[in-house]
Amino acid sequence: MSGNHTTSELEPFGHGGDIETASSRFGIQANAWLDYSANINPLGPPVQVMDALNDAFRSIVNYPDPAHRQLKRLLADKLNVSTDNLLIGNGAAECMALALLGLDIHKVGIVAPCFSEYAQLADDYGAEVLTVIGKEEIGFRADIADLLPLLSEVDLLFLGQPNNPTGLTYSLEQLRTIARRAEQCSTYIVLDEAFIDFIAPDQRETLLPELANYPHVILIHSMTKFYAIPGLRLGYAIAEPRLIQRMARKQVTWSVNGLALLAGQACLQPEVAAYEAHTRELIGVERKFLQEQLTHRLGWQVWPGEANFLLVRVAEPWTASLLQQALGPKAVMIRSCAMYEGLTERDIRIAVRGREDNERLLQAFQDVDRIRKESR
Ligand SMILES: Cc1ncc(COP(=O)(O)O)c(C=O)c1O
Image 1 (spheres, rainbow, N blue to C red):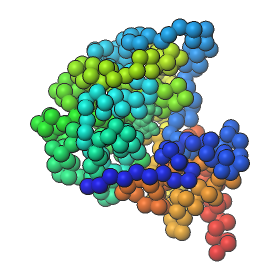
Image 2: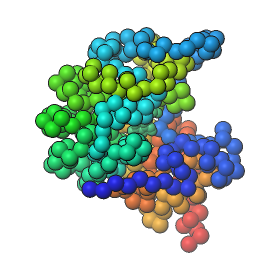
Image 3: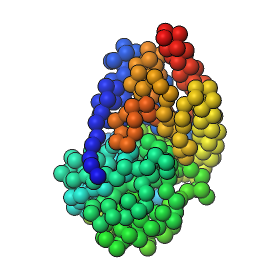
Image 4: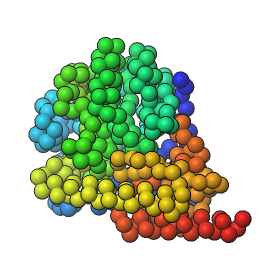
């Protein structure tokens, strides 16, 4: 077990989507980039969100509701939980921070490779990080036998469901085993479901319907990815009311702004169901297309992720960094995964976007690959 998280030249803050850095590095204006490094719904926000925001600008003279009551009521109905089970945050990231702060966490467990903020936040708040390295042969998931002892050593374990950057999930049975063990050791489990909306409701492996059995489990959702509002920031946590209260006590009043609340409420209107279905259909088709093309056209290894991104191991002599440098002048951004503990310098993550963009990405990959072969 160890702890480690580093950054790369194009990801100095440890995340994809850093158009500012890419623009200054390659001298290309911000709006020209084809961004495959951040995982945002390629359809953009639902029209209901744009309409709500167009009408909302006058409301910026008012303070947002510090108790987020309307959004909580709509979410409670959708998720079939009580409003007392809900905490609204400035992105899923704030909910994670509030779990660490509110639950007085000193030792955090992670399964590498995983979202870098788990370890970053732990570090920021002075908690020690214990890492289990996921096994490549099981899609970089932890062996459950390795995970159970970790639970008795840490105060809180983060697990991505689906995990970033692999896009893979644990089965419901595995989640139950982990959650039962966590209850025995009084260890909190944060199941980060930031990308679960990209999976069809009847195919999701989630503890949500049985959360009452697990008072140490916290589910965290993001609305920024699926509804394409990362600039507004919106996420929420679902947990037992006493945990929610402890987390909420550490939240800065009004940290969730009024426009984000209105956008969130618009996302929960019944008419948005068509957009949700369209998103899942598009992502399913395009993910399969990218998987096939990357495997057959380029001979690269692709993991069978279930979210709106794919983990890819590029063929030698490419490395993630060389590929980023080659794609930069073409205004294409991809995410290097070289800095993820447990992955290699040949690993990249790409988003799943619409067909036209995906064709452009594949063409860019093929062009740089051909140029490299010709120059040998
Ligand atoms: C796995 C995972 N969880 C949470 C987040 C943060 O989500 P938000 O933008 O809602 O804070 C990210 C962002 O990239 C992520 O990859």
